[in-house]
Structure formats: structure tokens, C-alpha cells
Length: 141
Image (tube, rainbow, N blue to C red; front, side, top):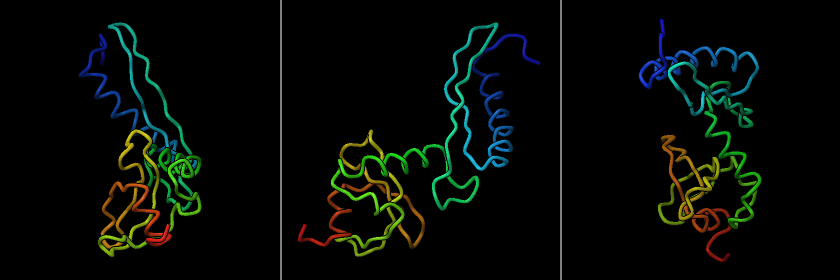
């Protein structure tokens, strides 16, 4: 039983909240996660993040961050010289020759904003937008 809120018991409470929210999220086909918290000894306030699943994702497969990156790519790809229709599509890296799939965009990463997954082992990478463009369009563009 919690008598006063502190960092330690809020960490434990967050884990319990995440577990409870996962049941609710899968019942509704969405992603739910507990965000930041503010507290004093008598009360605590948590942010609740809700997001739709990325198209084609199985329930529980994509985190809220993955969904945000997917959504950011859909809306902002052209600002980075990429095409929205490349999202979820595979391309061959012009440098390594390996095949990757575009999974999203991370706006806070200006040098390597495009998120990709290597198809052979599902490992995640960040690419420059030029690398992705060359992979889809070839070296002429």
C-alpha cells in the first residue's frame, strides 16, 4: 500500500498501469502507454498516450513511438525529399546492396531521419534521406 508518492513507488505503479493498459489497448485495437508523471507526496498525475496501430501491424506489435514515426513519415516525407508511398515498401541500399523497408521518420534526428528495418534480420537502422532516395530512384536523382 502506498502511503506517500515517491519515485520508487511510482515506477512500480507505472509498470502495473502499463500491464493493465495493454489489456484495454488490445480490446480496442490501439496502443496505450503511460507517459510522464508529476507528483507530490499526496498526489500523482500521469499522462496517457493513445495511438492507432500502424497500418498492417498486428495488435501489440507496434509501440506508440513506432506509430508516431509511421504517422510522421506519412505527413512529412516530402519535406525530406522522400515520397509518402515509400512507407512500408522495400528498397535496395545503394552502398551495401541489402534490402530495407521504410518504417517511419524521426524528426528529432536531422542527419539520419528515415527509420528502416533490414529485411534479412529485422534489425532497425536510421538512414539519411539521400540514401533512401537513391535506393528507390537510383543514382540519377
